[in-house]
Amino acid sequence: MIVAIVFVALSFIGLALILYLAKGFHATGGSLNQLASQLQPVDLNAFRNLIDKGEELYLREHLDPADFRSIQRERKLAAIEYIRCAASNAAILIRLAEVAQQSPDPAISSAAEKLLENAFRLRLYCFRVVPRLYVSVLVPSAGLVPARLADSYDTITRQVVMLGLQYPTQGMASAL
Image 1: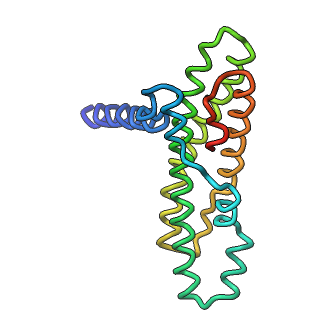
Image 2: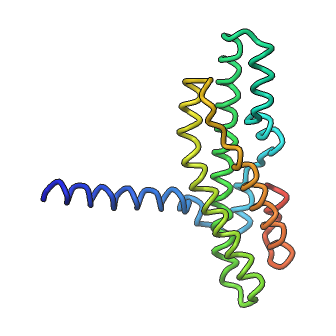
């Protein structure tokens, strides 16, 4: 009986932690101008290059194994930094979407709802991918590549642009 209570308590704590991290409570305060200034640019082409399987195969074929492992570690650590920036930006976009959802215009509210859903999903995906990438830093031959992450980030960037056409996003689209 006590074991069951402990598991239930740990489950609730884990759920609360996941929601806290996914929602991005650190980005909830401030005006849209302050939030826009906190956005960090993410170069999707550079990120895609870092996680490209073809690029990895090319490096594997043209470098000796020790150099390949070293370079792969650096590439994975750089990819992790891009993912952390994307997760941080997603938290800010969650806040933007929450504010935009309050609009009386149904088109803006609908666009904000889609942005909120995708930003939330991207943030959760980022938290799932980072531990896998750390494993691949330790074991460079492990093919743990987050290929769809760049596409998800690109989608929410386009949604911010579309929302910005209808709702003042304080230049957030250009900062992404």
